[in-house]
Image 1 (cartoon, rainbow, N blue to C red):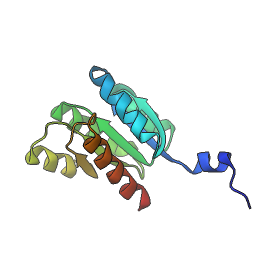
Image 2 (cartoon, rainbow, N blue to C red; image 1 turned 180 degrees about the vertical axis):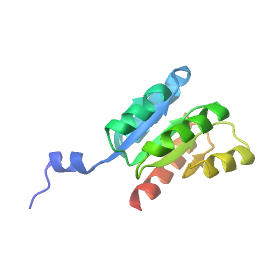
Image 3 (cartoon, rainbow, N blue to C red; image 1 turned 90 degrees about the horizontal axis):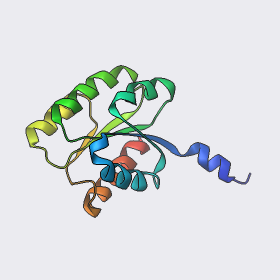
Image 4 (spheres, rainbow, N blue to C red; image 1 turned 30 degrees about the horizontal axis):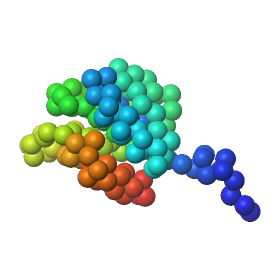
Length: 133
């Protein structure tokens, strides 16, 4: 049986990118990189829980600078995540903050600024590993 483009499109992984409006450039950069991995939708923090309630996602990427805000978002999303893994992208985080994020439910924390090639490469590697298992 020949694989059609419609079948490939349906089989692509679904990625939800939760971003704050303040970092629109970062969100655009991340969205561009994530579309090579799967179907990506960008929403604000306020809409993230509702979106997870409407549609299942394979991975949720949180791109946010505020530690308290990110921990609060993780707590709110936990009930609705289903099987989705969460990856947090932060450009300035201590090991204590990274540990707190992992304990709160994040599957991974990517430290490099998302606008850099290294940050995009590390995020891509993390997502590919999470999507395999």
